[in-house]
Image (cartoon, rainbow, N blue to C red; front, side, top):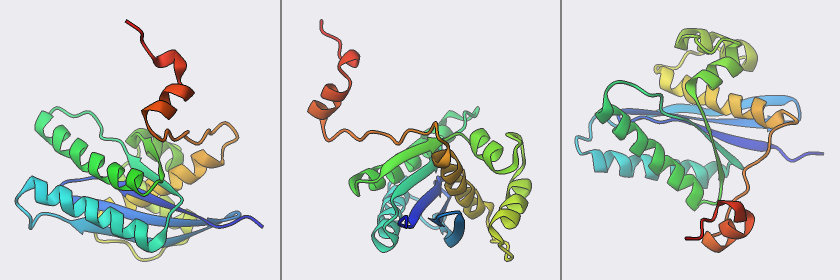
Length: 187
């Protein structure tokens, strides 16, 4: 019998970060956790980043997920917002990598396509499909939590595909170079 797999899904944000844990056992999926980390009370961006790193590290320590999936920032017009979002994503990824968990990133369009069949679906359509697929009744207060759950479920679907290749983790520069000799430039 196959061991249950736990997927941690993250919807990064510097004001509200969504997170969710999905347990997959054979063909059965179960939501273990779906919540948000509210950061608006912290005015300092570096304090917010530390809170994100701490929360992700705490979730990893408590639930021991085997995989980590995160939504990639979409390209917007506000450069400052993009930088802040990228930092939030970076510290969440750093927490996962520090714990030795492979990281997979999905575009918002890919997540929506995976859950609803429509890459342009709105948050409410994604939520309604999650309710149906995972038999969830209670609607969370923030869509950030449901977005994180959608990222985790998207990862489950993608990793179940026969064409999916789990990332090969390098254990340092020497290991990376050994595994990727064609990417080394000799000047």
